[in-house]
Structure formats: C-alpha cells, structure tokens
Length: 162
Image (cartoon, rainbow, N blue to C red):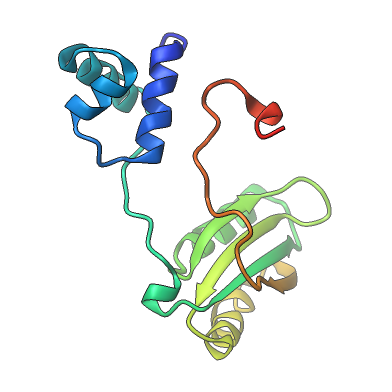
C-alpha cells in the first residue's frame, strides 16, 4: 500500500473517534465527497490499516470488576515452547490482551474477571497449568487513569499531548 496521506490519517482519526459514522458524515468531516471517501475507507480496510470495528464495552456493566496485569516468564524460549504458550494464552477468554516483551519478563497479559476468586481459579486452573512457565507475577489495577485511546495517526507520535 502507498504511504498514508493527510486525508487517510484524518479518516483514521475520525473513525477511531466514532466507528459508527455514516460515509456521508465521514466525507463531510474530512472534506471529500462520499464516493472518494468510501473508496479510501475500503482501500484502508483491504490493506489491513483498518482491521475491524467493534463496540467498547464497559467491564463493570458486564460484571468484570477485577483487572489484573500479569507478567509471565518462560522456562525455555524454544520455538515450539513459545508457540505452545501463546496458543494456550489465546485460548483463555479472560485474557483480553497479551504482549510479548523484551527484558526480564516474557509476556504481559491483561486479565478481566468478575471477582478475585475467579482470578485465583483462572491462575490455578489455567496459568499454573502451563508447564513451560517458570514465574507468574500479578498486579491488580485499582482503576483506569487513561482508557484505551485512539492511535495518534497524524504522525505526532511521542510529542502528542505535550
């Protein structure tokens, strides 16, 4: 795909703010007529720049009161071991994010559960059942200071918010 131009970036910014905009509303906001706007959106989707649309659900509204950030360390870094661990992590519905890390720990996962008891059960029955994990370290979140935010697609990067 060719490089993103200013209008592509504006489309991405607007859709991150509100993925339910009609094509007409989006076209008006980015200064295009509807047909070229729709072509650009489809091109961004086809190229994988836009990977999907979804509703953002409040965890508390669906009784997911506990958020845990869990660091995992592997006993071995062989390819088959890593693949097996990642497959197991993806299979646990309460793990809503998992990141491969550089440094002392190998993974950081975010887990949501309704109660501390449910987290403890998940820890015992699922995480500790993964034989290639050598260490597990859990930190519980008291709240969210900054919720998941739109990506700074305008090229501002780290200077954003200064």
